Length: 383
Ligand code: UD1
Ligand code: UDP
Image (cartoon, rainbow, N blue to C red; front, side):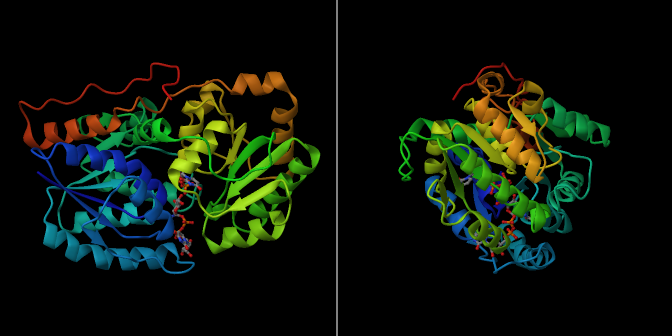
């Protein structure tokens, strides 16, 4: 059967790479094609190169400081001819970006079934994160097959009335990607001041632009001033709204290293040697706990409650006092740090892509293909 995977941004590419690799490996069962919208350009290309993915279609849509509405309009028009030319049995999308929602809608308009990888994540607040929460809800409604990473995300889908047999709990494909990359990641190449504790930072959410992001940056500056043995590394997202704030407030300090977005292998190398992760990223909330790294989340809510429940992730908001206070506590109180530095992995076991492939075959081909056994976390860290 023909499967067209459509994605456009860095996190989608990282999390779809193991699925594409699985479909390609099973070439007797799947004719796997890839279309990238290139909603991201450089940040997408970094990932395509790490995982050696050569898309059949590259729509090259990114423009400077684009809006969700503009990207939706251009992706919808550009995807339609790809769908008619490829005529896939299934379109696979991932996550919650503009590309995700638009590709699902474009497929629906052609009556092509959609499979949603990372289905069912919810904050239950339509404006946080914005516009991702609504993108997820819309994509799930448009999808025939729902690949929920955890039992909690399956529960969200069932509560909204999704058909139980459309849902498979697969684990998150990010753990498949992380296991692959962590095994080949050596010591980091990035030059950092020696003998310091590394605080790894990423922040890029649209709802944080302006004052919240400025508060975060000011607090990080004061963290570094308060702890002479700390170095902050912040690979700054290419969104101009993020670049402006980060470089204006954090630039020029000898223990704050601002870099371009880093290739995934290098980023995982740094994650492995980091002391603490401070982030508003979704993927990092899943990866860092698997490596036993405490995570402070620069948001007021999360759609990933599992690691919060396990005690390794704390949602701290974006206010100056909270960011400075929570970072300082973990940097000065060894027992608070130890209680969060437990390696846990509620998000996957490295087999998510295999379950997705099996669930697709069971749905479209029937016997002898069977639905896979669902993911259930075993505890402990495989990385
Ligand atoms: C998008 C997603 C967000 C995801 C994030 C991952 C939407 C609405 N948002 O946010 O869910 O968490 O990607 O990083 O889909 N840019 C570049 N080069 C790049 C990438 C971005 O220059 O490789 C700049 C461009 O000026 C671009 C801008 O960043 O217009 C914004 O990109 P966009 O994809 O619209 O939003 P993100 O903030 O990256
Ligand atoms: N990442 C990366 N290089 C970086 C920063 C992050 O490869 O410089 C990876 C990170 O490990 C994670 C993903 O990018 O897998 C997260 O992407 P992003 O923060 O852009 O999106 P989100 O997860 O918030 O949707």
